[in-house]
Length: 155
Length: 155
DNA sequence: CAGTATCCGGTGCGATACTG
DNA sequence: CAGTATCGCACCGGATACTG
Image (tube, rainbow over all chains, first blue to last red; front, side, top):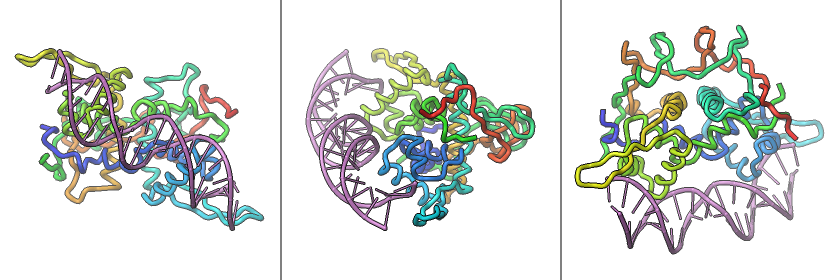
């Protein structure tokens, strides 16, 4: 396969990064996956400015990754909570894969910040690439990559 | 678990993004995983400026994700090829997970740009989170997340 | 071909202030 | 608390030119 001969305009890695590749964006998704829902909680926990957070929350909502759910504290006006949609939760493998790489290659001497385990059995969890035919985890060597129907020759 | 109570300074997602989270970086890794090795090939295929590419290649090399391998074309001086190290190949699950999200949620009507299959059986490939105890693919609901030994309370 | 050096315009982003 | 508005600077990154 000559990957160089094909345009990457419609590469799905690229398209995904167009949506979540900006600075801060995946950290917001990470926090949302860990139960953070409110503006100020995101802001203080992640440590970014209001303007940027506001921008990212809007983009993520527009992209369908977060939904706003109104709520009202007694004595205050109605506000929005931000929750992951199904589309947002589908980024979970990306987060786990990023986490795994960090744990493996830039470990903190004190150990992982989060301990992720299969609730049912208590075993640690990992991100893998697998065969849909259930032949178990795969490595790059096990995988053949060919141009798909959407591949366009480079002009 | 109160995720909000913990510092994210040493979060492994964050540490990974510190290394590969800049614009262009993962696209370079993607191209490298597809066999691209030379400066000008990266430049023309991805479509970024020489200065930025030079910067990213250096950072990726410093991070141990790429290695330079000298080569010499007849009649020219020695130059460098850039190849993924083991550490670089370990980003493969991240790439596959990003690709998968793009294929699912921002599909190109023409179909995927790359067709990835298990060489041995011809089945499509997917990124999943799984239990190391071999209970198959997991969803966020199957996973318990607790602070690990490296978790630090938020000051 | 494989870069490095310089310039410079756009913008990302933090700080601050303001509003309901 | 949940944002919006404004300002100012740093820096990102494209264009161009130059070098081995």
